[in-house]
Image (cartoon, rainbow, N blue to C red; front, top):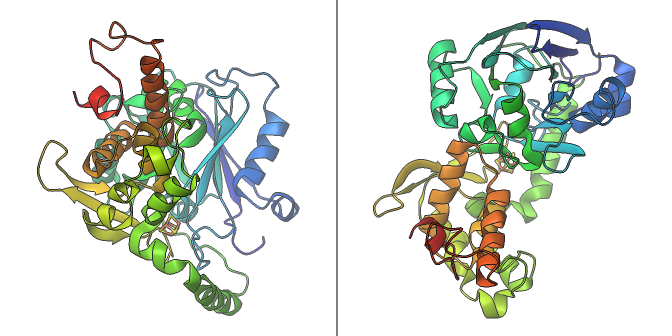
Length: 386
Ligand code: SF4
């Protein structure tokens, strides 16, 4: 087997509580690499056409790549694939943090689910051994509590990808969360877990990830560390929040549900950008092997948006809950990010949906009869925090 791969894929039949393992062939790896390359090939070969995304025939895959868990820079990602319940076509979402690496250390390059479980379950993968377990005590819990409960059961080294109440209730914009703040957010993949009553995957193990030429790999890491110096400082200092103000001003970030301009409609973008955001950052957060550490743990010490140990909103979240809805209150965005992370909801789609609703209200398409009497004209804060 080529370096970078564990060499095994796991297949789980949720309806019959059965698992089987297939070896990864080198030719397949060279053709499709990993991530959604593997996912597209396997779904194309094994899934019937025109399946109902939320039905038993849809397949759901969690797949790492050959760089995941190796010393390669930003070698942390895993991808979730399936037919999207939101778009009714190809769906994928990817996430960083530690879950992708943990899946490989637990013994698999990827895991694919089919069928629907009768009762809520979670998959425990422990050094190659895979087992479906009862998750009725986890159903209804948010993503933070789910992760805490699974770590309490299987040890702190267990890494968890899970859904919250949004995925359970089949929200078409539900995300899959890991590390309490990293999201495979797009395409409604959280609803794919919810529809098959799969609450979580817990991965734990210490299997070595093979590397074909470790010396050369380390040299490449050093080379690329120098190459990223140019853009590294902004990402290191602020994360993607570092570009928010310029993005709104230049038209890169959407303003007022895509109908406005930063220069006239959202001139105070710096209130939800770079320094204004990291003022609330307690410490930086890095995914596996990443020297950039663009993430951050946040707290808002007082007031109605008070929180502790939240995650730093990404630029997309600042745009969706900020410039899209003309909301320049950064504390409210940090809080909204945290609410979505706990519920397992894609922050981009959530903010965009609210922005659309506000525009509908402003044009008389929605009225106070639809909003429980709340006047939703203007900034979204009125909608969420009347
Ligand atoms: S810390 Fe940031 S830059 Fe590094 S892998 Fe994670 S998301 Fe990417």
